[in-house]
Length: 409
Image 1 (tube, rainbow, N blue to C red):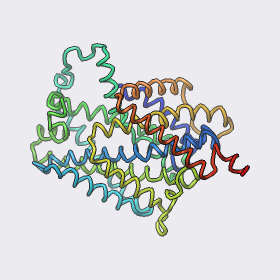
Image 2: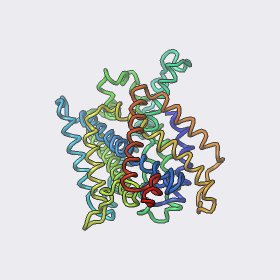
Image 3: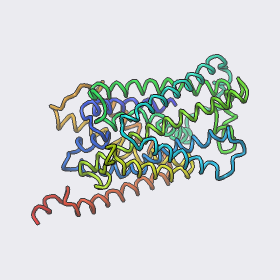
Image 4: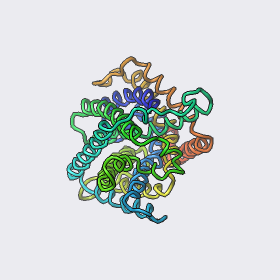
């Protein structure tokens, strides 16, 4: 929790600036394309972002489906082995169905989900504040902060979870074409989201461990209660009936999260394909409601399939696969934009530049290096496969770096 903020916030400044200056749909895809050169290395970087995103985006959504199914276990006692699979399929299909419509119709659904999220969050924090016990919350085990290699690896693992919890704050960057006054709205949205998420993250965690001893959740593989910590908190204070009601509210909140993710993420492959930087089929719009139907169905479908993996594996893979191209790539893209496009409109400026970029780079390298050998090799393998796929595709379509040769023929 403490480690995720230092490199999340410097990266926030880069997204604020890029989002304010380049506010079309696609987010990181646009920033990488323009930063590295639209008809040069930026074409490869944009393709690689979409390539890794076709996996990491659905993985992030899948983590929400898995969490939904886990919390549902508090209501569905003695859930059979096939229960979670059935739940993620139903929730995944419902999510696609609700988003399979014009963006203007989605607004009302989003507001209702947002209100439910606020009520749930407020109820948990209010309960935690009334019954908080500092002796329980700060009951650290022996040598909890003793420096060692194991400590660093544990810190890296905790950082991946912390980073995962912050991921949704830049969702607005992916739908820039559909945002009013994006030059002001996008930076404000990011700033407010990061501050709000940080406060909520700290308060909810303290609310839980200040009432329910952390030893009741650790190790998670041996403690079923770790799957629904908030429900257990409410059960200890208000009894089972109230805990069940709050669990339903948590499920509402979880669905609101995956709803927002699929909404934003379905626009990314569409934006890239529309501009000729990814496979053309993803540029298809619904003939009546004018939304990216193919992209929505593909991202939504893969998300359901990824939900059959373990939550820990899902989080580790989605973070690691994004780090090299998206998170570290964006750091260099912001600097290149500053150097190569000095006249670009900049309604937002990075504070103390380039210090935030440097801190973000160090943070992401640390998180990636502590991801584990198998995860690192998988991420590098996916990147290598993406590079190979790009050169095959670009050669067939006569794009960079084969554009000159194609014209000569």
